[in-house]
Image 1 (spheres, rainbow, N blue to C red):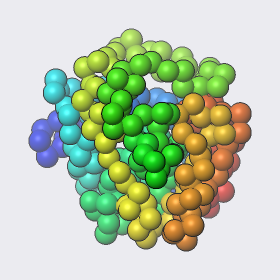
Image 2: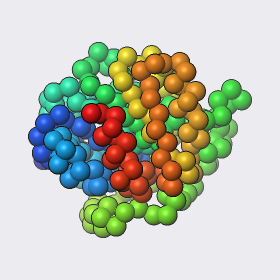
Image 3: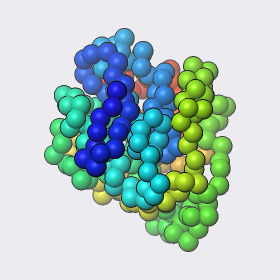
Image 4: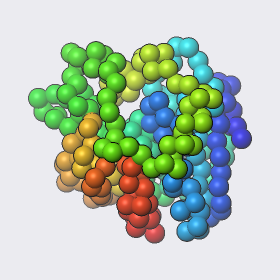
Length: 257
């Protein structure tokens, strides 16, 4: 199925089950199939699971010069306005989490029930005062460092997710070099105030073995906003929901029920 954005782009999506809606957002270079291990689990628990491919990803519309991260935030608004899920729970991984951070900044009054972000610091660039960015990147070196390919997982992902991803990767290849400007704009954002001022319950999920982020950023932010909670998943790299799906699903279920 597809929803059309305000500028005429198509966002491919799937809806599974019925009940309290949960909208899942994938990260940079990702596909909605990364959430395959969440679908049956949450449908069986009485939830409606909604996934979609973000612009320039998967089966959704592509454009050659996407360099504005804000468009992904607007796309989420258009997606929700088009689908009209009732008081949804938003769950975002990596760049998808930053889309959520940006969404609550731009649309603070939009009715959402809860928010969940997965292994994503709200500020990617490290500074002397902020040591919780992406790896070792700074304003001086981020473009060079973000071009590199790094190992995301600790021990790979679940076979079910791997094979489903394998199919769509062949159908809809993602070329990182063609989307670096989007990644750079994502990296330049600072969503800390958005998180600190969030008036909706938000769970920050981090990975103890993440190659990208020090999960202590969540503890630091929790001190500044009582609406925040934190769960750290052990024996997982960056792709928590596909590396440790049972642990992730239980943590998410515990939070939203």
